[in-house]
Length: 408
Image 1 (tube, rainbow, N blue to C red):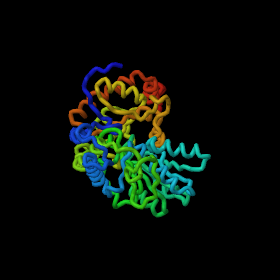
Image 2: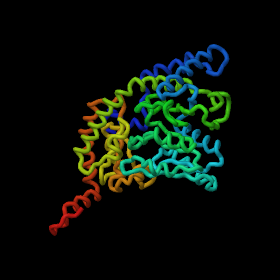
Image 3: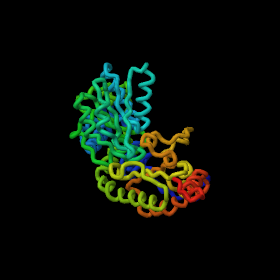
Image 4: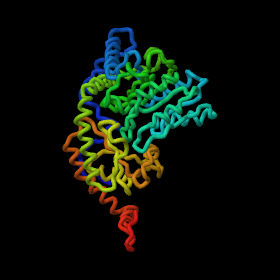
């Protein structure tokens, strides 16, 4: 299907974000003028090392932790793997992992692989979620045992934006002597985080989710936490992660975290208001649409709406004709006819799960862009439903069968 406009209305920020102009400007000199190795003994490399240390400090300020508790990785996935694998190697006598059914594949697939490839040495408990995507803390407490090596629970869900009570969950794990990891890739920069006041042992973040470049991540490791490196090599990161530092990206991430701290109020006021206006407008204009996820306990930028009796991929293709970038909760493009594992875990009806569409905003979105989506999406859904035999059948059922009864 051809694109009919050169315009781009980007509302897929949970997938990736644009690099902020200020971030790019901060990075550029370190591709050309200051290209030294930060580990070198000479001053040309030393000045780069000092800039890396400055960036580490900016990231620590956003997270509320000490700079020496942070190590740089290539991405959130590497950070997740490092934390989980470190925990199970540090405590080989403990064979249990607790996570949830709605985790990002970076955690979900690793845990399932550990359970399947080690002769069932490790048992994984994937906690269910409620229909609004929240978690039952009683079920969580019941899942913790003396055999549990680590809990890994995302701070905020990437599809729905639903926020989990990480502070309380970490405290409950700590009471049992269990390590606690959170994938905070979606949360950092959008909600306040103060790790010094929490019992979190590991936290993962990824630069490209908060207007830094792709290819840079961070793992927070609380002081005193047992730790075994994932990448073995040189002395970089105090021996915790081998490999020459990705200097320009690290410096960009430092600047991005500085900006995120300054813009967090805007995220939770103006961006949230844009999200609410989009969400309320779509649900009011499009019948048989429903919000997926808790109404309030979620990220300020994220809304996930199901449009019944249409396919998410078809919605995205038609949106793309107008230059509107969003994402689908359906996994059909991966060769599966099943909706996403998040929608299934929440018990979203089959007729709605396939039509789930996520809009994730940023500080770069405007009211005019919200109006643009509201002007085009209702007609897109109406046109798709007009071609859907499922919609026709549903409407026929609701209208009754002609004998005076009312079905549905």
